[in-house]
Amino acid sequence: MSSIRISLSVFVLSLFGAVTAKVAETAGLEHERIAALAGVEQLDKLDERSAIVLIHSPAGPFRLETIPLP
Image 1 (cartoon, rainbow, N blue to C red):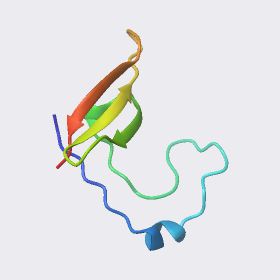
Image 2 (cartoon, rainbow, N blue to C red):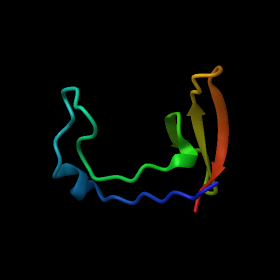
Image 3 (cartoon, rainbow, N blue to C red):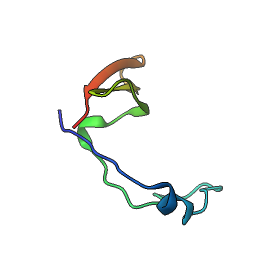
């Protein structure tokens, strides 16, 4: 599985407004889609070495998995 690294300062985030309306594709900060994490509904840091992800697949129920952090 691919590693992901996202590092943004609060200052940078404060320069962008909230996405308040539905958009066709994407809005807000530029980002890169990671194919290995398709279906992720929520991602959060679990500990210093891992993240926990809630994954939804159209073929089945939600799954809760951990992934390594870079």
